[in-house]
Length: 506
Image (tube, rainbow, N blue to C red; front, side, top):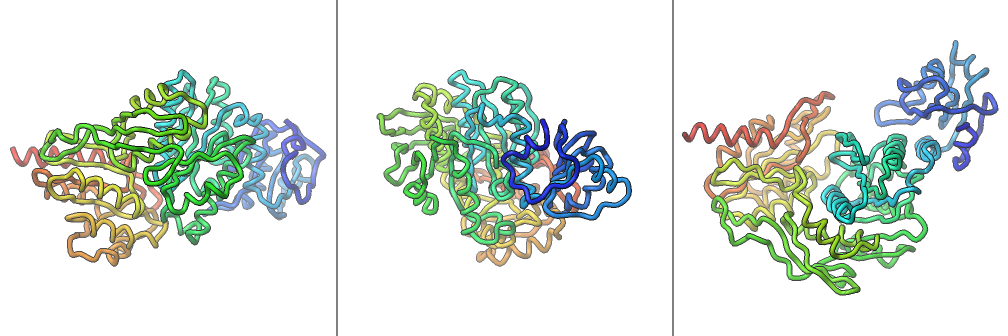
C-alpha cells in the first residue's frame, strides 16, 4: 500500500520528500524499522519518537510521520532528501491509529467488535461475554488485561488495550482466523491516547465509574469524558450498554445519540436482576459460608429467564448483567446466554479462592481502587464467620490521590490490615505506604514493605473462620521495582504461606 493511500483519512500539515512510496510495514519503534517501512514518531511518557527519526531513516524507512520538523544530519538528511517522505501531522497518535487500520484493511469492519470500558469489571465482563458468544457456536477473539486471544493463538497481555498498530494487527489476525466476534477491553489510557481510533464498534459497554488514574487524567470530569469517548467509536446502528445504577453513568442513557440498553438492579433498567440468591451459602466451608455461585432472574423487555453462575458477589451480578445486555444487543437468544453464563468459571485473580484445606479462607483479587477494595472487603465480610484480614498496597508512579482513600476503605471495613508494596516501580515503597496511612482512622494495621513477608504475616495471624484477602495484583505474576520486573505471584506466595503454617502446626 502506498503512502498516499494510507494517508487518505489522515489530517496532514505538510509533506516533504519523494512523491510516493510503497509501504511494506509500519513501526512506532525505530528499532523495528526495516526497508520500505513507514515510521510514526510518537511522543511517549519517557521517550519521544521524534528523537529517533534519523535512526529510522538510516534503517530504511521510506516515509516518516511526525508532529513537528526535526533536524536530521549526515546520511539521514540525504535519505530524507532523496528517498524518504517526511509528513507532518497535528497528532501522530491519531495518524498511527488511522494508518494502521488502513494498512490492515480495516479489520474491525469485518468483525462484530465489542468494546468494554469502566473502572472495574472489564475483565470479568469480557470473559462472560466471550463465553456467551462461544456458546452460540461462533468463533470469538478477546483482547484484555490478562491475555490476547486471536482465534488460534493466545498470548499474555502487556497492556489492557494494545497500542493502535498492534491492536489492528491482532484484529487482522482474528479476521484471518475466521473469528466473527471480537471482545475488547478499552482502558481510559487507550481512549486518551487514541489507540482505538479507526475501530468501529458494534456494541460499547460502560460497567461502572469510580476514582482511578487521576495521575494521568487530572480530574474526575476529564476521566469520565475520556471513558465516554468510547461511544463516539460506535459504528452506524451500534448500541451502548450502560450500568444505569451507577450515578455517573446512568444519565448517559438520555444523552447518547445511539441505541441504548440499560442494565441494573436498583432502578428501572431494560435488563435487570431480580431474586438474587447465592447458591450453596447454606453449606459451611471451613467455618465460613462461602457460596459456590449465583442465581437470579433476568428481566428483559421480552420477558425473562433465570441464570446460574459459578461467580459470586454482588459485583458479579452487575458483570453478568452487562454481558447479558451486550448479548441482547447482538440478538443472542436466552438459551445461549444461560449456557454461556453457566460455562463461565471465576477469572484468575478475581475473587479467586486459594484453598489448601485449612480452616480459614484465602482470597486473591485484582482490586486496586478504593471502590473495588470496598466491594471486595464487603463481600468477604458478608460470608466470613470470623475476621477479615486484608493485605494491600498501592502502585508507584500512579494516582497518588487514591492512596489514603484505599487506606480508609481497608481500615474501616477490615478487622486488621497489612499495608505493603504493590508495584512500587520507580517510587520508594515506604513513601507510598506513608501516603496510604493518613486515610486509616483505626489503629488496626501494620506496615510490612516486603509483600511476601506481608502475606506470610497475614496467614500466620488467621484463625478458624477468618478470611485473608490479598488485593491489588490479582493475576499478575511479577512485581515491578526500579524498572525491573521480577517473578512474583500472590497466588503462589499464599499457597507457600499456607503450607508453611501447616508444616509448623504439624
